[in-house]
Length: 498
Image 1 (cartoon, rainbow, N blue to C red):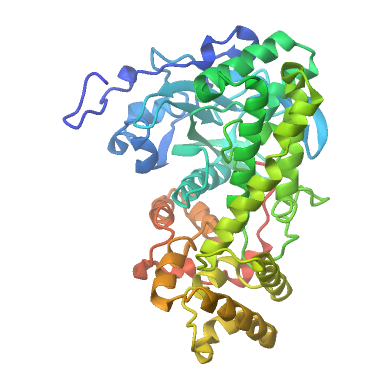
Image 2 (image 1 turned 90 degrees about the horizontal axis):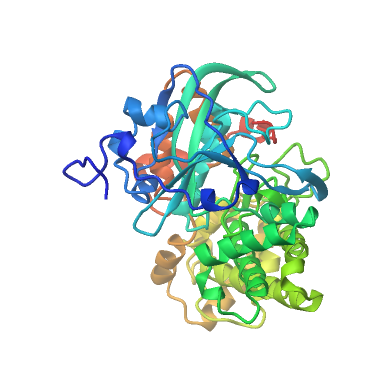
């Protein structure tokens, strides 16, 4: 596989990485070949052993100078074919025209136990698609993307991955001057909805077809034999998108910037910018303070996902050939979302059967949580400890609600629902604890790790990663990561500036 090898089979020389690049085999119109722009004196910040295993890299080697230089963009291995891809898209519902990898450079791909993964350096310098940007990322946002990518994977949510973060003392101007960083993120592909919108908007049906054929042959080969492979592609991407967003809703995750250029053609959570996990539940919560109109609020995410699939359908229409067929493909979104969210909510409530009035029980629960701003993660985790015949022991749950009598009324309905299926307390708690995380990447936890990292102390990044890799475990020695956020956390704000 690699040469030379360690005793465990990993490469010890970064120049021996067997990088390939299937995207680079497309015609030159789809990208610009270019080299990353080096950063002065790069240093190691953090790495994910789990992500490294996906590309057969030894995580112990990633802190070595050669790997730090490579995954900062200061050194390019001989077999790499670095490039920046072009795409377009709708941003906040408005057509933005040509966009592209303005600060991300695809280094190449490595094989792993589950297939090839592309390695992309985010923050590696200007590209022809940078527009007015500097092509850089800052340490703050790079740490957030690194931690959240791996946290989402541990939660079982479809996502891109993050291999490592490197930093440099070079100053980068955002709202203030911050230090530069590069996050190496990984996915089977970084092709987006906007990749197709680009060619459709330019009336380039041949380029559109070449891209679609590449995606089908490389990532959806089972669709190649369909009567209309392009319709089948739209349907499968629509289904995956609906399922992904159902997962988001079930853990209280908010993406913050669901533009079509941030939507993965593989149904993966892509481009971690102003994201957030829900603390006090507010269905209208907006995690991105740039989003003044609330387009990407928590409650809007499912319908925005559907809207984005319509934009993809419009782009693919020249290939599909029929408005009716495109509309039929889009019809899978609502039932796929509804089926998955119902499945996830039943699991979160420890329900093992399907009953007609389950939707009313769920709606009443979210209405109660919204009215009382109950903490999203803690509520579901504590709900697992509810005892069927002992409401007198509900204190921990009741105390999350200002209107305790309203919780009591909902709990009566919930207990009645549990009795319908002869639910057993111990068995139910074990099952619920496997799907209701105790630990999520709350903004204040990320901020604490970032502040230490800005002083060259990366220990909290590593510790927080270790906690988030086991979100469903009790971890008694890490209880401080599972408490209600402090008051100051409510003032934290994230935006598109990173």
